[in-house]
Image (cartoon, protein in one colour):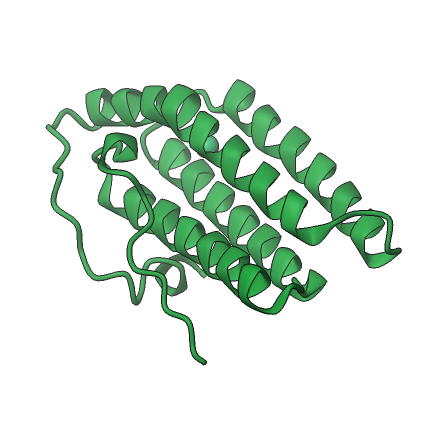
Length: 151
Ligand SMILES: [Fe+2]
């Protein structure tokens, strides 16, 4: 059975920057799909978690690029990203060694991401909007190209 998990990003977590919102949604969808696969089969492949970490890394690079383009001080936010990646890659290493449950890691990553968006990315989006001197839009574009556009 092929699983499909439609848009999993709660509306309350939209920050109003289309590139960021699209990537957030793609990551939420990926995590939700992996969790659903795990619940269905009772097994979560560690490669799926590695893919999520790669999406995080790409997404963090996108935010860094947007900050640089808008000349926003991104040092503290970048530190949060780096600390999180370090922790999650350590968890990935533990999972590869069989010492971590992948489903639990997916739940942790999802919880961390939701908090990060609500607390840090929302502030970043406001600073970005102010720096760009324009109002942000709540419009959402198709998801197909948000990561590849910045690869
Ligand atoms: Fe962020």
